[in-house]
Each structure stands twice: as structure tokens, then as C-alpha cells.
Length: 347
Figure 1 (spheres, rainbow, N blue to C red):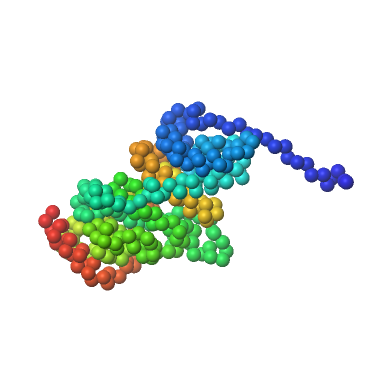
Figure 2 (cartoon, one colour):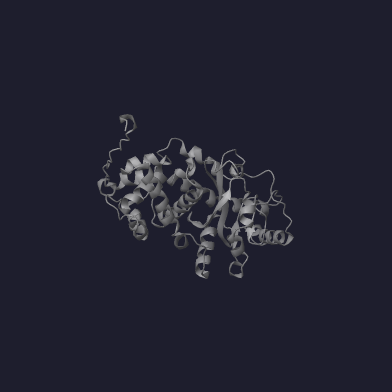
């Protein structure tokens, strides 16, 4: 055999893996992973069994390293090679770990992302929302946000191009007054309209059940008016109508603030994802779960290490669309008018 045809096997190397959890102090750890140590420890305790099943090889990657590599990927919004180098692992291993941990975190959705179930939970939400701008019976605010993607494929990639010209998933979320997610829908392409996503969602079916008969959610003018989803008036003529619009907009603002806080904690959601579609959806769901855990654990907002990130996130401010949904539901219009007369005319 010729010497030129000999395949030289690459020498296998093992990069050092730094124990960031114990090496860094609380502040430095928080800056790098966007969560406090106690919160990371809590998250690890809930997914450790799923991660241990993948650590049965020589020089295996322990669960805490897998979680920190994934959090670093969420925190930087960079390529997998960056997270891999940070954790002392290969790009291939980093990709597998991000997928594995993201699926494990997304599996916690039923525990941390849910609608109110008991009358006491609903009443607590109503009181919290009423304290914002005196809008009665509100349990949540709904809106959509775009998460950037690379083009999924040549065949149907254009379905994911949104009205701003880039590829994305249009993610719908219902949030509470504490900026926590109560419902998230992640399967729709960027070209889908917000109202169409809601019309085909499980949330709409739930809101039409008797258990939510005395509850209201608020949306912008892109949604169709209904007896449980109230939108702003296109034109106001009386003082009561102006108060209604002001209160509706101020109360609904929590969903825009939630998106801003969410994307600043996990910049990968702003800069975009270059993963397979299934993994991308799992990452978005995982970040929603982590966001709620961080809110429950009272984690502070991470510092803005990225220059002008507040300006970058300004697109989360709601845009009143030129073509609003036709308001043809007269019973819903009558309900909104009655609310304006009975409540806002006496404020």
C-alpha cells in the first residue's frame, strides 16, 4: 500500500472541563449563565435523572456540565462551537447536549406553564391585573413574538418568512401580571397571522368552556373581538371609551414586557436559532420554562452585556396593524360597550 493512501487517525484529546459552579462567585456565575446558582441547582434536581441516562461512557459528561453548556448556549446566542469550547467538549457533543437538555426542560412545561385552575387562582390573577390599570375580570394578556430561524428548507421555507422579511416562528403567549407564561404555542411559521394562531389554539377552546365564563383576556387590534378576548376601540368619542382604551393598553403591556425580559435573559431567542426545527421548538419551550422558574425564584434581570440590546428589543412594542380584524361579532361588541358604560364611565 502506498504511503500516500495511509489514513492517519486523529489523536483523541480530552479538553479540561472547568467546574464553573464552584469556581465562580454568585455574581460572575449569574453574568455567564443568566440564572442564580440556587435556581440552577433546583433545575438540575428536576432533570438530573434524564441526563444521567446519557452519562454511562468513559469520560462521560456529568449532568451539571450538560446543563451549564446548554445555559451558556442560551445566554450567548452564538454557535454551538462557542458553548462547546466553554465546556471543554466537542461541537458534536455540544449539539447533542443542547438537544437533550432542552427536551428535558421542555418536559417540565405542564408543571410551570399552566392556566389557573381553581377559583382562588383566577381571583388572585384578577386582583393583580386590576391593580395595574383598574381593568376588571382580566386573567391574562395575549400576543405573539417572532423568533428568528435559518430557512428550514427550499420547499416550504418561504412559509416561515414573516412580514419583516426574515425567517421565523411566530410564538403565541398568554402571560400573567407577574410576567410569567401561562400558555405558549410554538408550532406556527412566521407568515401566520396572530389571530389565525389563536383561532386554532387549545387556549381558545379552553376560554370557551364554562370554567372561564367570568374571565377576560386582553389582546391588540390584530385579534377578533369576542366575549372573552377584548381588544381596543379603533376610535373613541367619550371619556369612558378613552379610559377603556388607556386601561386596556396599559394592562395588556405586560405581555410586551414579558417578551422583552425573556429575550434579554436568553439572547439566543433574539439572535436566532440554527438548529433543526424540532430542536428549535424544544429550545424555545425550554427557555419559557426557565423564564417562569426564574420569576418564581425571584432571579434579577441579567445585565445588558450586549450593546444597545434595549434598542434591539424595541420591536416587542406592539404595532397597531393597518388592517385590523373586522368586528362583526355584535354580542361581543355589546359586552364591550356594557363594560365601558358600567365600569369606565364611573372612574
